[in-house]
Image (cartoon, rainbow, N blue to C red; front, side, top):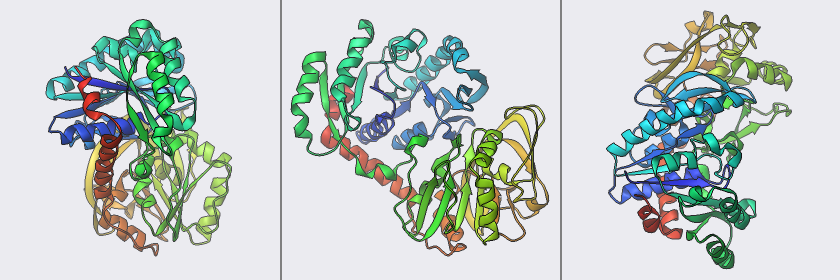
Length: 476
């Protein structure tokens, strides 16, 4: 087994991006590399070749390695459904729901699956680059931890600790982590790196030496802010951002359980599109040409959330003004007349009135559809994936959005309201161009090639500012 684990001093310090860049750098050295994250919490999921689901950050990291995503790369995925509960995915399959308190009791069972997946990956590749979750300094969670030091100790994987200087206090982040973790955990750490530095990194030389002196850990370098991070998919909803384009105004409703929001990345990259991620409490702007109701982990919960913002009234007014509406997955279900959940698969059993912009009805069921698809939409090739509960039928389904190869989605009689279960549909250049042309906007090709170029640029960035060779040599 040869592996190294990147842990962080906190959430959102850039671990996912660091691992993606290191995966690409190591792959370019001729190694067979795979990413691994023992436990992830995200509603942004990817469908794998073996018919399961993992966090989309691990799918991007797999891409950096030149691999197809596999469920072993992220054996435990938690998909939040409420503030206190989440759906638990083990090795790609949902095994139930758990409240935060109850989840701690599941961890011993889950650790076995984590180590099993890690062993399979290790047997198949030269190097595994592991991403932690949150921070090892959350010592209150340490007794049953499977995401950071609990995994590192169980699997014997050495650790490099990443600190985020952009949020301030990076000396305290790293020195403080050593101070609060167990001595045996601290012994797993082989060094540290500083991420997201703005300005001249040499200005931090004294602080860097101070961390080395206080911890006894070696430093692997200071990584300046990667300006092209926006070209890579973001995993966390906190990273959602508006685009810099101009022209067609596309507004996406930022739902409380928004899921698979990287559907919007190709639109955000278009110079002829201005994408607004509409925050709760804000009205839908009158100049919006297209409003997107995105995917969600909780269709019924987010339908209530949407109404609480007054967006149902805004959507009706937008449609009356001649505006277009697109619902994706859970957003598609919301656009219908009724959502029927007889077994409580999405929450509390019962029927709820939808927004009524499409003449369709959705019936929820516990089974989840997980599949990759290819087909035709708007006369162009389209590819994507489905990841949803529920089946939708009704008169507007007689005008399907796509054939993949079965009919998918629905279009209103006036052609201005569309619903689809397809995630990732905008990644295809030809389809995206046809879709935007219907709305009077031009399109720029090359989105997918741009993601690969950004991964190469990220690897170059890390090679220039980290001692990558020494960091990879930590693996054993």
